[in-house]
Length: 152
View 1 (cartoon, rainbow, N blue to C red):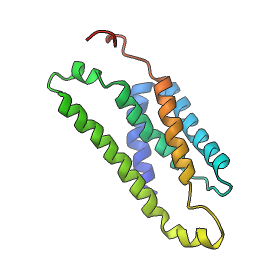
View 2 (view 1 turned 45 degrees about the vertical axis):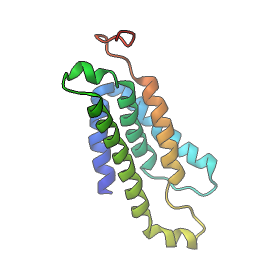
View 3 (view 1 turned 135 degrees about the horizontal axis):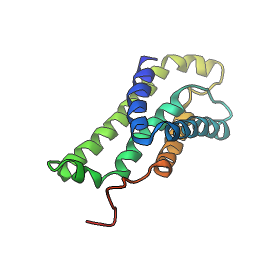
View 4 (view 1 turned 30 degrees about the vertical axis):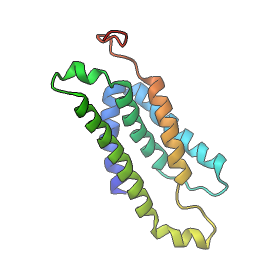
């Protein structure tokens, strides 16, 4: 519960500051509802929870980083290729930690899930939220008006 709140708070504030309130609302709804619909269509046993939107936020961070890869050189003259790769690996570590916490937090539910023939909470929803979040963040972002992607 606390991990969900912290991820929603920190990543949500960051992505909202980059997208704006209206686009962030559209992004959050697409990743949350799309992830839940993905879970409902891929598995006959699914659980509802905050994981689709949470993984949508992480995918949004990864998508924002991929979209703005060249802008790191413009904003910070000291940012080299190694700095960009380091930031990219930090994002991957965040994703890995989220997967670890999701699996470790769902272990107490495994006995309950096996007893009632029920899926461990929202695994497909997390995958769907990640997929919908990544595609929607790339669709909703606008390039910086002062920076042209065509110039070197």
